[in-house]
Image 1 (cartoon, rainbow, N blue to C red):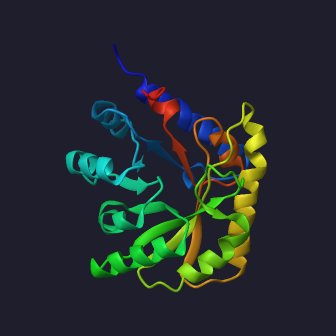
Image 2: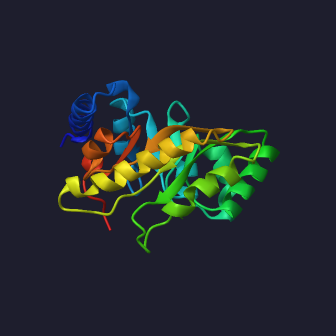
Length: 231
């Protein structure tokens, strides 16, 4: 049976384009990431062949195996919670790390990146919703964390990442995406050195169109590309 991966990607790209146009944005300003946790290699390769150029992984070891097999013609981004003891692998494996949410992790990433002569691109993960089950720096502490991390020589802060709460109606996620965009704008206004703030990583399968309307530059989509994950 032919997989629906390619058709799903085309449908999602069309929806992203529509959302960008509704918001008066350029379609080229939004990139589609395929989230591949527990997805088998053949379907990931299908997604790459269908034009996906960013893969999001949650686990260092799983990413390492896939990168060795599939190569670096695409970008590999770390989107899962990252432990400090995995920093030395993460700086070598990933083109961008979306889940930096505390200073001790940033310091270790900086140290490991320096030792490898790398400039590691990172996003600051912000817990906009305040949910206890979610990772991320609390909203009210995010500006201070950005300022502190900006002093580290081997990290390049590219922007912010968040996960909105899950809602039946994606419109209910809009205030969270708007809040992240407004936080990004305040950080830009603060003129923090080495904080470029060009990226907003927000929006997933259920709410990515609303995220694009509110300024997302990277949307992280798994289920809508690959179907429900096996548990």
